[in-house]
Length: 69
Image 1 (spheres, one colour):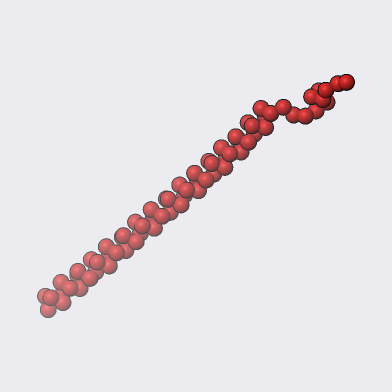
Image 2 (image 1 turned 45 degrees about the horizontal axis):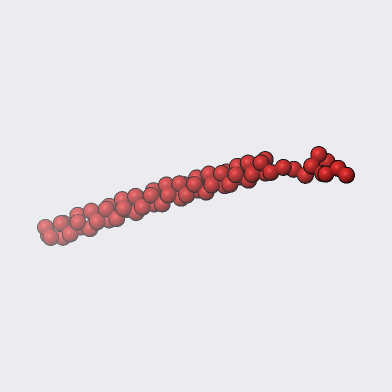
């Protein structure tokens, strides 16, 4: 009888351990996905800022840029 009791307790322990590990992995995945999303958004903002800055440096073609003859 003692063996059955110990086996049952050990099986319950393993189930709790597996559930805790699964919860830990899911939490890690959720944090990693959020971090990747944040990095992607920052990269897009930086790319947009780089494009805006590049277009501000280049002269715009207009009346004042055309040579007069």
